[in-house]
Amino acid sequence: MSKTLITSGKRKQIVRLLKDGLDKVALDDSGAQRLIERGDELQEGLKELLERLSVTDQVADEEVESSYGCPSGYKFHPTLEENLADLERELKMIRRMFPELANADIDRSVLERIKAQDLTLPTGAERWTLIPRWEKIASTYNEAVEKVIELIAASRKFINYRAGKLGPDHLRQHTRKVDMFQTLGEQQKGHDILVVPAQFGLRHRGRSIRRAHEVFVANECGLGAFAVGCMLLTHPERLQHYDDLWIDCAVDEYAPVAVGGFPGAPSFLFCGGWLRLGACWFDGAYGNYGSASGFLPQ
Image 1 (cartoon, one colour):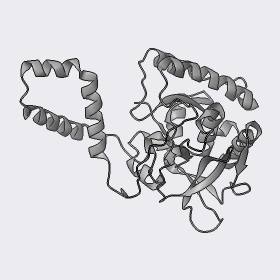
Image 2: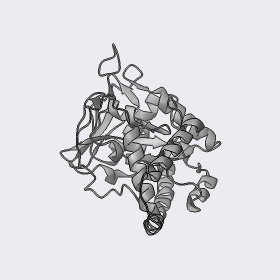
Image 3: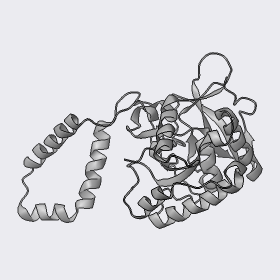
Image 4: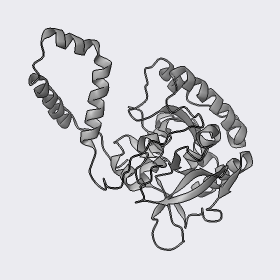
């Protein structure tokens, strides 16, 4: 992945700044004790401050206010127990939908670490979810996307605005996503279904795809049409209403015509009772869209 994690030198500088800031606050002993007792709130507030101050201002104008969520009932932040139950349900669905994976399993050691809370969700992720390795589904990424689209179309009312235009001349993967899934695959070696920390668009709602790329943190990467399509197969409730937040597949690059560049990305939307696959320009900021993303566990 192109972004690198913080160096030890910069970490020390930030810690020193935080210490200097603490020294400037006239805390008495009772006030300090209240801070300690409210440690969770302190950490959450500090996290939000650090995230806000560390975000680049590149294409900052490609971001609009958004209050879109998911009135259809998808739960953006399930409890640990709910998430673990979801993973087992997702596994059964994936095995049933993809004959190639009928006997596949997930890395149970990862699941045990999640249960023990030894492995926790990275900042920004909303849940653990299962995404198959596309290489186990088809010989090319484009064919794997087509297969997922066929499964969606067989399961619900669906319109594919990009029918016949999902080949390599129109759709390609961003190298950042390729790198992330390669790393996840190495971490869960020998398993054809990966356990992935992810978020389904809420984190980047109102941002253009280009702006989302700018603010992805070092261990974060957008998800493509294959991954988002798989998530919609296992969580159809995510897009069932016009007012549900629509989803940009931010690290698949899309060309409407098979000449020139790739100025957009695939997107899933819901309108008129139908789930639809379309595409958005990289620089368009809309309140009803948000880029889905995955994370590397830290």
